[in-house]
Structure formats: structure tokens, C-alpha cells
Amino acid sequence: MERTKCVPLRVVLSFCLLAVGPAHAQTFTWSPIDCAKSSIVLDGITKCQESNSYAGPDGRSDYHLQTAAFTTATERVYVFLQKPRVELETGGIAVPDEAVREKYLSKPSADAGKSGRNLSPTMRMNGGYAKTYALEGGWQCFSYSKDAPPLGRSNGVAYYLVGYVCAKTPQVQTADTINAFLQKLSVRR
Image 1 (cartoon, rainbow, N blue to C red):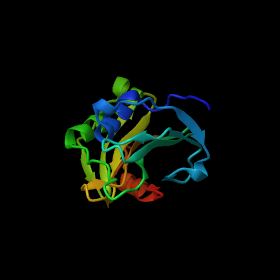
Image 2: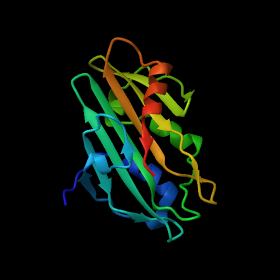
Image 3: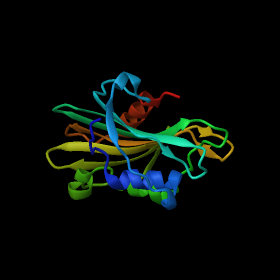
């Protein structure tokens, strides 16, 4: 089993602590998977990985993390997913508060944290939230948090889906571009 470190640790901890809680800290091992078998559905993804499963706070839930990405000379796409592996009646994931979402949207990657500039206010999109920003070298980007349907009696959601998209373009990412991307991105249940 190959161990890789692709997801920023703060992202994993932010989302996992909501579902697992600090008393249930677990070690994550990442393994490559066939993108056709990934729960993340998006045309063009070429690199996918999945974590080992981990127990939820009630001891009955079973969760896992997945990532998907592709990179070309003119485009970078990264998707992070957390969802229940086994869906029980109470198996929804706790809804993150606004502060958790803002923290991720403001620094979705190490590059954005170091050299991101012109960060926009958070925009409520048709299907989620987003912030636009620019990176050195002419990259125009947006970070996103896609809305998930409700799941279980716990008033939770079916999954967390966040990530970022960057393109080498002189034009800033627009609401139409972001909405079109969010409509193409989905999760297999």
C-alpha cells in the first residue's frame, strides 16, 4: 500500500474533527484508487486516492476521505470529499459552521496560503460557496464548498465536498464559470 500526502493536514483535521471529535483521533493512510471507482464524479480527473476508514463519534458510523485531481499546463483542479462509508439512520456528517467554511475557502492550498492575492468576499453560489483569488504566474482561481443533501436523523449532510480550480487566463473566474463547475461536480452515493 502506497502512502502519499496530498491533502493539507489542516484540511483533513478541520473536517475530520467535526465528524470524529478530538477524543477519537486516528491515523490516515492514503492509497491510490482507480478514478472510475471514486465517489467523486468529474470529467478529466486523473489522480484519485482514498483514506482508510475511520469511526465516527457514535462508534457506529464509518467514514472515509477521497481526493481527486488533474493538472495540465493551463488548469489545476483539486477535489476533497468526506462521506460516510456506511449510511446509517444517524450517519449524516455534522454541518460545518461558517467559520470552518471560511477558513477553508480563504486558504484551500499551500500556494493560496503563501502567495494568494485579491481574495474575494465569500459568494453564495447556486450549489455552494466560493471565493476567487489569484496566484503568481497568471493563475486565476476559485475555492469552493459544494452543498450536500441532508442525510440521517441527525440533521447532518451526506458529504463534505470542497476544493479549488485554477486556470491560466487573464480573466478573473466569474460566477457563471464557478456555477458551471459546481453543476458538473457530483458524488456517487
